[in-house]
Length: 105
Picture: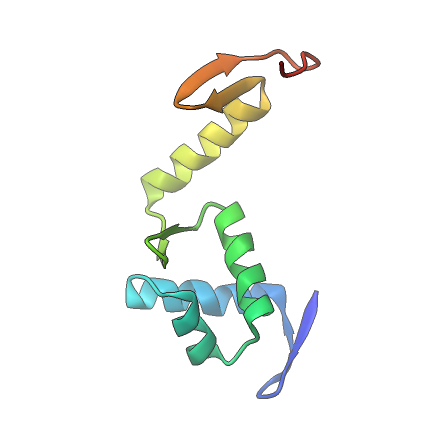
């Protein structure tokens, strides 16, 4: 998806994500309001970027501050994601195995 910024014209999602991620890592965490102020992007654009970066396991929100995940967190989040798609389910701190095709009760 492309976004038009009043300052630089057409901007790709990847460029927005790069900017947001480097602001977060450069400041050792940022609030959404800080990102809005410093980038000049719309709230919807920042929210979409934060969602993508979180889905990629690069950032996480702690007490309303977006922080970069460290290398160990990135690996762990990706491993857990893979496990959960293979039939494991995490619910209330309990890990259960539900083979593919078996419905939830």
